[in-house]
Image 1 (cartoon, rainbow, N blue to C red):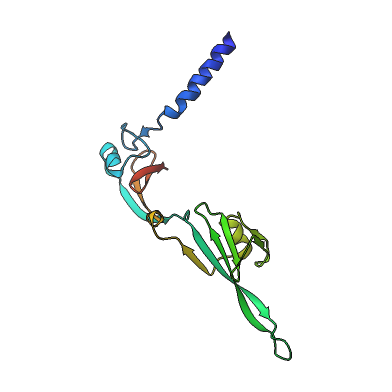
Image 2 (image 1 turned 60 degrees about the vertical axis):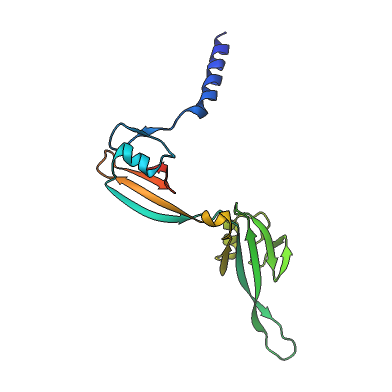
Length: 179
């Protein structure tokens, strides 16, 4: 009977966890604030911050194409000396950063060692960068809904006189983090 009650208690707690709030106190008083609140709501609850920083961060989770120009020695035949050329290699990534197309000199391939190490469809941007280095050109999708998601406005409210000093971080006007 005791095990049944204990099991039932854990089930009830497990079901109610997603409904629990992650609210916390303002750095300056005992007013509660929660992630997702706007800068105006936090200012009203906590007061003006001691200082504020604004910046933007780019969202790389958009489709993009990386182009590389791989040096190649081209044999001219006969008595003509070999010439240096390049072979254009492009890797296209989806919005999750996975390679969905690899093209070497305009021909689609599933995998290649053109960079010295193997790259293949499904590889991450980090894996391709590790094998091939920084691309010569990056073409990011910039039309439609994705264009609005490329840059995020970040505002930091710094409460330096609070104990402990606290920074509240807002992305696109919503509270997302606390340091």
